[in-house]
Image 1 (tube, rainbow, N blue to C red):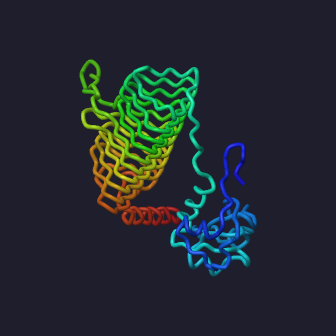
Image 2: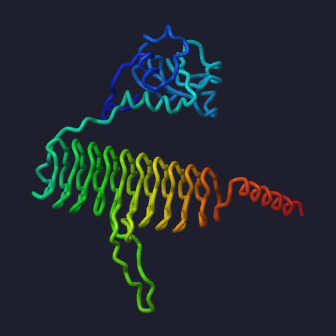
Image 3: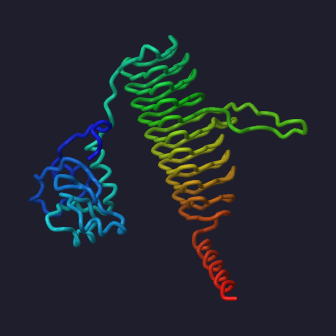
Length: 341
């Protein structure tokens, strides 16, 4: 059970309700009126909790689980413990995520303006927003309806933010336009100068960065991630994209819709990602590249060339996955030959 000091639980929900909201099919419809009071991992779930199995690594935990119900695929359903109600889905984890959202919806925004907040008279902040202690909102900034701004955040002049956004503590925003339902976790920095300079024999000459950052709807940006504004073109983050902690996105980068960037990814300036691109942790991309829709870049890859749509690459320098596996196999054989000498 989630710690009630930090999480507010809704429910309970019947299995019929969980089936309807998740799209899963209840294997035994006569169990539809059974109540589930929470979600939990397979190992700790009890008779009134719902869990899930998607990764076969956890089949033993599934076989021994006391969970009252579980989201599973058709194959796993055949091996379920006796008495466990089964919600069958082709994507059990997705179905579980929708159920978990129902049990733990976002905290309701309570309208307030902390006395220590500094809100310029020329800023537009609706009365139904929550503005935390020591927040600074500068002239011309505009917030949408029902936004939440955490302590010590700074929203610079001219910044525009859509409805229902959640801005964490110590976030700084400048030179940016942000869509609706965006989540910015603590310490996010958006709109600072891009890394632009002209080489010179005496010292590098800084190039003014005159673009913006444009962020679409339903974007989630992790703690201490930084997104530079464009140098002339805009830096763009497409709607629905999920960006992990400690990611660096350089000036003029374009990230398409529903991309996923794991922790410590770095993307150099003017690289373009089409929709649904996935980059594993610590992946590094050189500048001025084009990454096609649905491409996957493995963790710790160092990418210095374009990637075609749907292609998976791995390694440093990154190569197609099949080529990387062949290279690895050759190196292993060479190492074994050397050991036998």
